[in-house]
Image 1 (cartoon, helix red, strand yellow):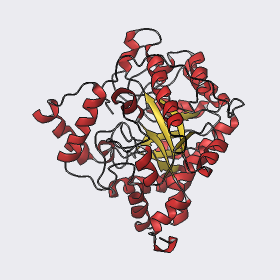
Image 2: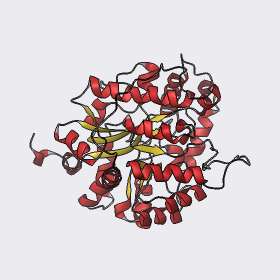
Image 3: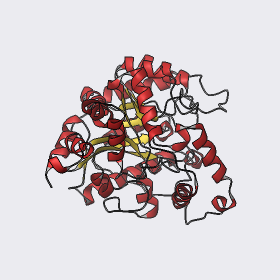
Length: 397
């Protein structure tokens, strides 16, 4: 088949591979024994990613906050267990996935025909209020940290309600030290899940561009996880990028209500499995089957609004695959990125602008940040992971 016979969207992806800034698939490998180098269930594996034009992926290590209550080092050790799965995946399938600790290694992975894999951490509770842990994670390959998840920390407030008196309004001195240390190391600061004041405190502290790896636009849907227009403008002024998420509940009021309705059904509540990761996978399959579909055009709406407010250079994608219950119609898994390219082209985006959204904007920030730290080299410390311990609880978005 010649290039001329390929669709414009497929030709574009052949030139500019997708950069997905947030994917949660490592839990399936750790807890369910899925080999992500083969075609599996769930949303993403390397086979379907390659089929869909994936070139770079941030594979995050998300740890249920319950591990904090298990004692010192429990959250850290769970993170290390997940991180170990990333490195085992890369070692098992070196032609399909290569660790990309900086822009140079990212480009080298692409030159070898492999997906560039960037380990990330979702939730600052994994560092357990210890900068030594941050450095340790960096030495073992982590290059993105989402500073806070839905649980408030003693040093940063999330976007959720219910913070106690011990939680700062934004970030405190330790939070600022985390941001500065990440800037010095060459680790990307991720502000998704952060409260609004935390968001602006982070921008006031950082000397590098940041990302909101998986968020939507609050003007289109007032979900607490989404960004206001003021935040989008501030992110652009920082030189950063928002990764528009594929989570149906973040994209439209009606979809959030539809998800909630089916979560209350007896069938949903009766879903069981050997562990919480398995239950979450089964629940997502149930929602995908039962809930009224949400059009892919809603994702394009959020991308279009973000571009209108922040500018074309400051918008990307962060699917949140395998961290969300269901996806919009046409974006069911990682083989479907081409459908989003097609819809962006149909909406009137120029090919160069689609390339920016699907890849090069995130790549620019990643390269700039990881090249800035003196420690961002090709050297990678061997990782001796602890036992996996208890499995993850069901994710709550």
